[in-house]
Length: 296
Image (cartoon, rainbow, N blue to C red; front, side):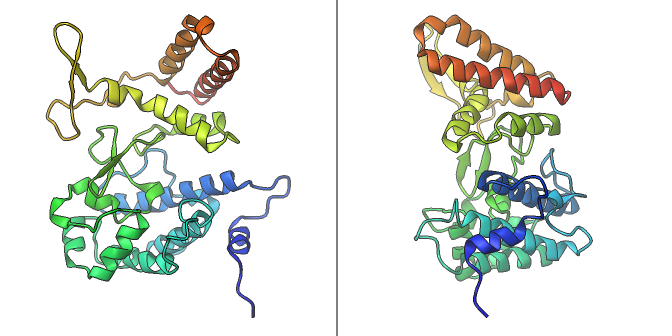
């Protein structure tokens, strides 16, 4: 029997679509959502919070929720990894056995309750297993468990698309590295849904610009200026005075979109007309979707 190609494996993952065919971007988003749902259930069972937008009863209609959770952990990783062989792991530098090796680590982590105490688990696995974790997250340096925070350690045992902002500082730490992502694990369901609708079909490079713009408050709020208004320094993650304005109860995503549209109008005559039109269309669409989904 001939082996399935990567493309054929991905095709098997996608349920029959009678009226439409899923694009690669839609497939990747579906797999992202699925792995977020499954690992949010894992984290909930460990007394932790997963994705605020997760639906642990649905698993994105991809993984059979009647199966035991330990089976769904491996299945969700396998499906996500197969899809990402056309994305994150498309490089020839990705080890051929990465999917199997990291999948085995995830299975072991679940079976041994690692999501309650991730640092102890990582301290007890073999060098080969640590290497699989390193490869799965594209870490440049070998993992030194004693240097990890709780969040950094926990996220090493979660597929990249499902990693969580454990301390709600607006950054997602994996190993010793920090990343910005939007939506992240703290983003309300209605906001995440509006974002998905507003960016559907958008080229990834363009979407990443808007993702960064959504997270700018985390960066700018931690810039410190002296009495003369000159930049002094930036607070670092972990500093006692590091702030995340997006975690405030009264934070309004609708207001953010309006601020961006006001900014565009103010600088309209100084901008490239095409850039103005494209950005205005995006922020107005996102605002409309936010309102449609009941977001503040």
